[in-house]
Amino acid sequence: MHAVTDISTRQVWDLLEEVTDPEVPVLSILDLGIVRDVKVDNDKVNIVITPTYSGCPAMDVISMSIRMQLLSHGYKEINISMVLSPAWTTDWMTEAGKQKLKAYGIAPPNHSQQVCKTELFADAEAVQCPHCDSWNTRRLSEFGSTACKSLFQCNDCHEPFDYFKCH
Amino acid sequence: MQSQTLINYSLYLADNTLILAQRNAEWCGHGPVLEQDIALTNISLDLLGQARSFYQYAAELINAANPGAAPATEDSLAYLRDVYAFRNCLINELPNGDWGQTVLRQFFFSAYQFLLYEKLKQSPDETLAAIAEKSLKEVTYHLRWSSEWVIRLGDGTEESHARMNKALDELWSFTGEIFEAAPFEKAAAEAGYGVDPASLKDAWMEKVTDIFTQATLTVPAQRWMQTGGKEGKHSEHLGFILAEMQFLQRAYPNAQW
Image (cartoon, rainbow over all chains, first blue to last red; front, top):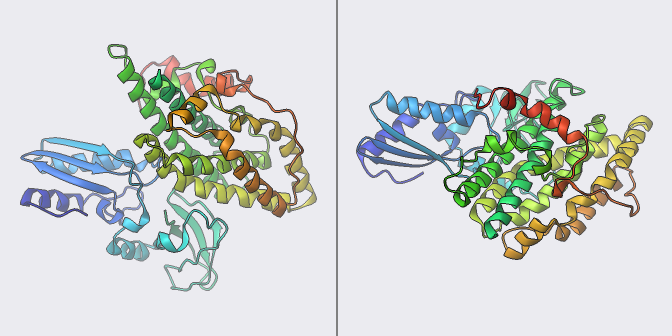
């Protein structure tokens, strides 16, 4: 996150905190770590966001939600641009965001340094059950209800759950 | 001249991912079980996203080179070019066959994409490097998923093993083209921003051999290989894909969601 320099920039960041991911509505786009920069010049706002996955269909909706949120708070000229590099990583997700995910029943992503280096293809990843906290879980499918999740089941409480994949 | 090479190279990368995305999407609602149906359509979506990034870049380059002409867009490049303009490898336009053939093709192509993007993310062309860096994370999951399926089916039942051998027979002669550099790939590699696919072949073969060993499958002996896709000489299958994919834009020009 970037240093907050003046009141209007801070206000825009605060407004963005209220914009949520349409597919995981407990997360704000700041929790998700996809807002890379905010610049405010009078009522002109420039916002830079980065996609989570190349084909993530939520990005268009998120852009529109940002625009609606700022328009309804009096900002007239809003420019939203998309950057690909540096590539988004789940390490940019805030701790608060991870806690919200867990409370929502989605296991938060592990740290990417530990488990999702590209060399570690077949290594089984230890994922904690968001319901009973057991580490005794198994992966049912590499892909879940959205590109950013995979499907797990807990061997102890037997609940199936989504895991937000590290990326 | 230089910009034409970069345009062709970007279109090649875009077409490969778009056509495979379209083929995989045909499984939507037809997967063997719900979880795997979702897995393959997620992979399709990732590939479609990668295709969009490459098409957007190609459109930007085309428009910069042709000021005053009607501007190209990601949509015009995907929906309004005909068969001969597409540069995708033939393997990606082949019909899906059964589940085994679909996952084997995905494995072959993901193993190539993984190696390609690892190199391309170091490209001095910042846009290509950024797309590669982004896509590499996605392809890592595709490769892991498809490798597991090749192993499961190859080292599965008598029936699944036989089907994987049949799939291998269908697909193997289409793998050579991937590593045979087209003129625009050679030029892109010489200019320093592209990757010569021939330089990826040994590492690809090593990965295939490793997974095949676990899958109790045998890497076929050297044989004659199909080519043509990169030059726009396609099988009859591509026309049918485009007919379906492009119908709406052709029938209702500029229609939008």
